[in-house]
Image 1 (cartoon, rainbow, N blue to C red):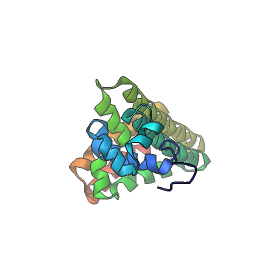
Image 2 (image 1 turned 30 degrees about the vertical axis):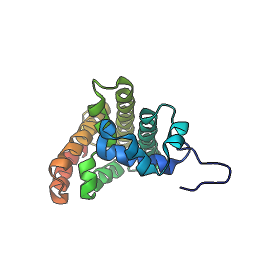
Image 3 (image 1 turned 45 degrees about the vertical axis):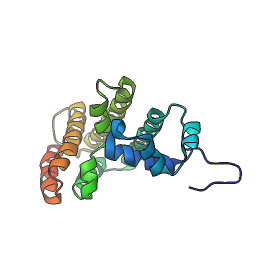
Image 4 (image 1 turned 90 degrees about the vertical axis):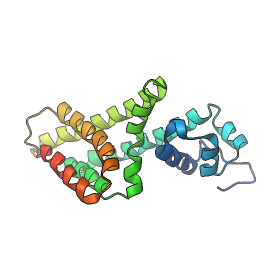
Length: 197
C-alpha cells in the first residue's frame, strides 16, 4: 500500500484494497471472516479501517460485492457490442471448467452470499439477489439479440432461458466444489449449453 505525505488513502477509495478484502470474503464467507483477517489481507491498521468504513465489516463486504457487480457490468457492455453474445456467454461458462482448483472451491461470491445471508442479514441478501437478477437480465438481453440475428432456434422464451442460465450458474458453482476436475466440469457445461442451440 502506498502512503503519501498527505495521509493514508482510504480503504473505500482504493479498489485494490477492496479487491483484497473481497478475496478473503470469497474464501471464508462473511460470517467467518474476522476483522483481523481483513486487516491482514488489506495491510491497513484498525484505525484506518474504521475511518474508511464507519459501518465496519458489513460496509467493506458491501463494497466487495459491488465490485463484483462492476465486473458483471463490464461483461454486459462487451455482450452489447458483440454480434455473437451467446458465444461469449458459452465461453464464459467453459472457462469455469478450466479454473484453478482453489477457484472451484470458492464458487461464486454472490451466490454464496444469497445462501449465507438468508435469515441472517436481509439487506446483504437483497443486494446479492439484485446482482444475480441483473446478471439474469444480461443473459435475457443477449438471448433476445441472438433471436433478432436469427442465431437461436430454441422456442422457449428469453426470460425462461435467462433464468435457466442463472440456475445453471448457481448449480455449477456447487458442482465445481464436488468435482473440481476440468474434464468432469467441461462435460457438464457442454451438456447444459446444448439448450442454447
